[in-house]
Amino acid sequence: MDNTVRWMRIVEGNAFVRFIDVNLRGAGQVIFQNNPLTGLFFLAAITWGAISGGAPQIAIGAFVALVVATVTAMLLDADEDSLRQGLFGFNGMLVGCAVPTFIEPSLAMWALLVIGAATSTVAMLAIANVMKTWGTPALTFPFVLTTWFLMLGAYSFGAVTIDGMGPPALPNSMSTSPFSTAEAASQALPLLEAWLKGPAQVFLIDDWLSGILVVIGLAVSSLWAAGLALAGAAIALVTSLALGASLSDISGGLYGFSAVLTAVALGCVFYAPSWRVALFTLLGTIFTVIVQGAMDAAFAPIGIPTFTAPFVFVTWLFLLPKANLKPHPHDKIANGVVGGDAAK
Image (cartoon, rainbow, N blue to C red; front, side, top):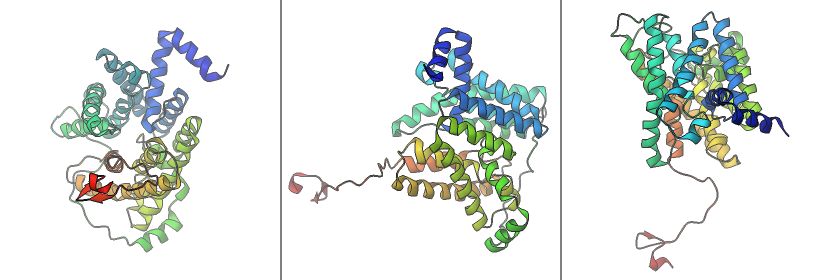
């Protein structure tokens, strides 16, 4: 009997262990992994990064929001199979990471976190119901949408204070050329750390060791996912350097996290790996970096982060064509009709 079968027998025989299993799977589903051990590594990455960064409230927020989102799904009698796979926990957990990152700790902040985590489950149900029309998943958009409203609302409420980011500002053109950026990076930028921070920033953690834990967690479930996460972060690093992005943003892995998610989603989750898929994924990952820059500029005057919206929009864009990425014959066209009687 292997460990997976043994664990599932324990889960089926104990309601409390089953609840833990659902939550761990929810953590793993942030990067599409239905694996409790992966979720455990992700939570360890968040905890390490939060504590080492002097912000333990981020780790606490992640745990609390994960449980709140899962319990909300149970109370709403959500689909049992989806619930057991953790599909209602991951958006809530990301809300729990984001709120303490950008709002100063207070009783009101924790109230917003709990409300946001619960609402992310409602948003997940609503957005998934809308997106099924086009056969595409909700991804992390419930987290993005919910947290955008929480942060925008914080500007109107005196009991909560925005922290962790600069004030709203009009976007300015970067004065750094691609050559000078790359030259400066070769001398001052710790490229390895910047690369590994990409996977960690999926959870809003600025720590390269946390990035290693995230990749290990992926490898436990899928070597393809682990490799594509590293590839996505590397592509984002090279692209952002070549385009002359802000060195501080590059070194913090801020161009890497959405690219990591796009690379995994397109490279091995929604398409079967092949050379065509690899090229498709490369294009999508590079475009994610461009969309990241565009949305950062667009959102600067509003004073809120883009979160994983670049990943969401690019992945939707690349899934909607329903391309099977395999060679296929074209039907003959006659009288403007594909496969019409005159074409037979």
